Amino acid sequence: MRGNDITTTLSFAPRIALAPLSALPNDGRHDWLGAAERNRLQRISSVHRRQQFLAGHWLTRELAARHSSGAPQSWEITSTPEGAPLLVSRVDGTSSIRMSLSHSGDWVVCAIAAAAVGVDLETSRQSRRWRELAEQVLSPVECRRLQALPKHALEAAFHLHWTIKEACGKRDGQGLRADFARRQTAWECAPEVAQVVTWQSAGRCLALSCDTASSAQLEGWNDAPAARHWRIDSLAV
Image 1 (spheres, rainbow, N blue to C red):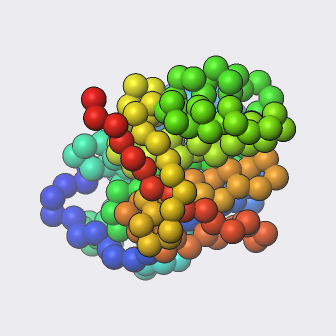
Image 2 (cartoon, rainbow, N blue to C red; image 1 turned 90 degrees about the vertical axis):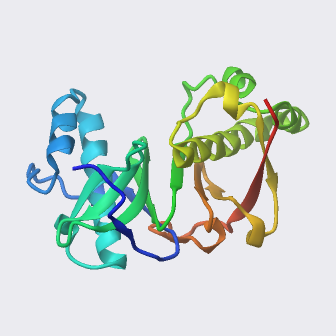
């Protein structure tokens, strides 16, 4: 099933849920997955990647059930005509929720919202060539911003900007495209004009991109740092 024009989007503030893979069910039962999800799962050979896939798809359903109606199994993950992920109620076949998923290491995060939404999670990875990546995806302004920082703060600052780029790309439905990302610059701003909200602490960075980002409610990160708010300026092609 794919999303269509007859679905009715439920209205609520964005919700984000963060959870370790170990906290989510792994009983081998997959009957709650839709047909397309089962097909995708069959194509995943990595055990860890399968665990991430199942954890994220279950956590999204749990979050939808907590903040709308029904059980987690009463929601199906499908897509909009443009290909963006979408939750549709199996009860009435029309109620829908926009969603986004991300995972990093042993953690998974999902976001649900009434409008297009993108979420990204990054945890520190020693193998990531972040200096090279910065030149590929950050705008010239953002690159200069990093260059002005002391060495010990560079990697954390890169991860912050990277999660913002990823979240914006997921919200737009295009993913992280280097040519487009280099034309976008994130500026810290007041909450009421924010297009992105971030949380960063202890090697973990989380970003949410949504029209109503400042009203987002975060679950599962009990000692989360204060949120930071960002607007995105785009350069003309």
